[in-house]
Length: 126
Image 1 (tube, rainbow, N blue to C red):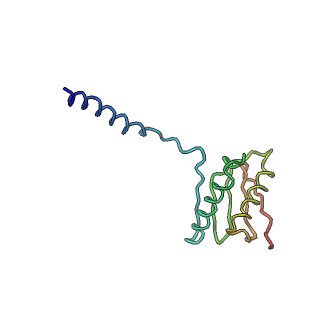
Image 2: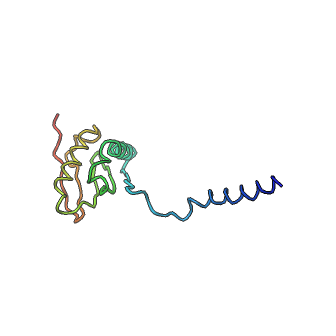
Image 3: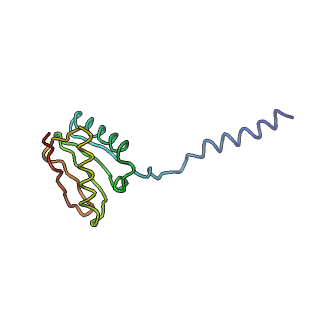
C-alpha cells in the first residue's frame, strides 16, 4: 500500500519538475552578447562583457546594451538607448570601458545608439 502511494506521488512530481522549464523561450532580461573578428578579439569582447556585468549591471543604461563587438582591437557597443539619454549613457559606457583595461587605448571605440547614431569614445592617453 505505501509503495503504491509512493509511486503515485513520485511520478507526477518528477513530471512536473521535468516540464517546469519547457516552453520558456523568453531570453534573459539582458542577454548581452559578444563577438569578435579574431580569437583575440572574441576573448576581449567576452572579457568586456564579464566586466560590464560585474561592474555596471546596476546602471540604468545597462539593460539597453545588446552586444559588444571587437574587431582589430576596437570595441563597438550596440545599444537601444533612446535619443534623450544617448549622450550621457554613451559617455558612461566609454568610462566603464576605460576601467576594464581591455582595448581601452583604441582610437575608434564607439557606442551605437538606437537611431544608428555613433558616439566615439575619447582616446585614453595614460
